[in-house]
Image (cartoon, rainbow, N blue to C red; front, side):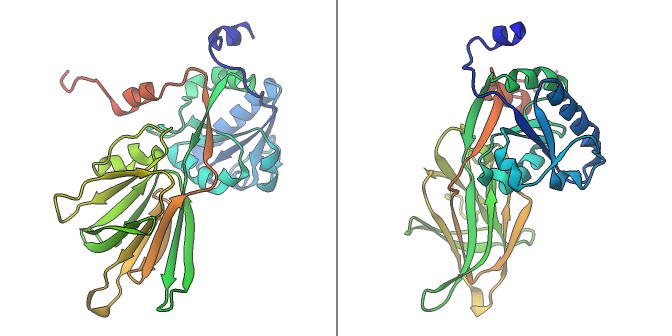
Length: 312
């Protein structure tokens, strides 16, 4: 405990962790051993460890108690084992339980799952004793409607997103025409392969590849990033975080075309150009837990190679 106090002397001692549930992508076999190891570590630290019932389906975890999704609400921590994709999926399905989430990286980049396999035991020891920082991350509420001539709307699909929502035709190099409004005010008509509505968390994901800016996660903003726009003057734009973004479509020759609304690269709502896509902040943010001493800029330097020489 002396080492914990020394390393966390500048960190506020938070609520200690008494019950934790481990979540992972189902059937991702390589993490099965890691789940057992983390459960054993938690038990040694005096924490009641469980595995999520959906996760347990894909693994042989006989020695770890199973907990239902409903009962996760009564735990202190959700530990996601895998890559960033695993955490994105867990966030969409579990954010409304309002339980903090911690990512243990068993994937590739690890911008969200920031605890490396080598540091798991030392990081967990500090975290369960209350030496950690918390951070709220905005999530998006994405809904697709069809509106009739009388203005009556029918909900066709709904999803959440932690990184971004991508609206596109679903066909490679196929332009669509989007009419974008913010809080009911017309902004512009965009001719492009699509448009990305992103959160600060998603600014280092698909949005970055499309030329969008990196946004500090604590900022309460949204980003709109055109995808291969026809006009060179369609730049990315930052909007207030409480904005409601509505996207309508131009119908050519009275013949609707397919539109895909993709959330975090994982969940897709199939629609057409007769539909309206509505994106706004979700009512509950995702609360992430980081080990004491977490530094966002350090993560960017390590993961994105900031400051590294391009020539050996």
